[in-house]
Length: 230
Image (cartoon, rainbow, N blue to C red; front, side):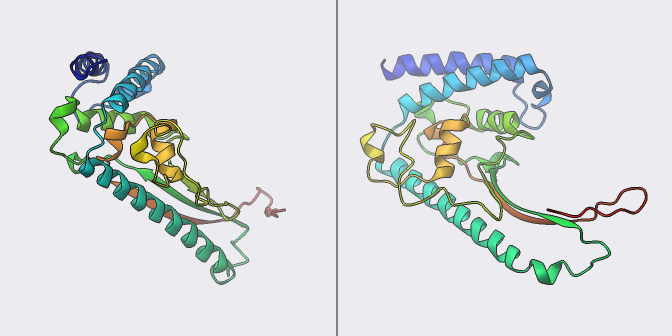
């Protein structure tokens, strides 16, 4: 299908999305409380992803941007694993209150967050696609908010890194020459396969949050019986 036809299809799909979700970036998430609307918007966003992946322009600048975000996400993931391991090694120093410390949870997460217009880059070739990237990316983030798909990486003490030097060269990169020499990291795979971001969306994402959290727990029954972890 030629580019003009793809742009026309994209405009139709995004028009249907706006009709359900609205156009107000600051107040456009009320639709997420309705399962029927969530399913419809999700289906339309999936169609949008397919169209934009087909439209992706593998210019030198776009390939450079892809490599940059891929490297950034790989680095953030590696740092997250290192931080969780460092916190785990310090547990004996932190859990120093036997009257309170029954158990703990240690988790690292990495996710894309939409916080403002600055969370989406504005690029020179935006007009080549005709997408409302800022609104659509915000809606994708809204759809995943508070679900298991919100995090693109989740690390625990026993987690094994999913980046082992082999490229996650799966959908939508498989068979595309411009990605053949790039070791695609797991988080890029997660965003573009298991979530609804297209390749053009990916290179515009500009707000990644990595967090490592240690929660120390006191778990007690009414009679004072304390929880004893296995």
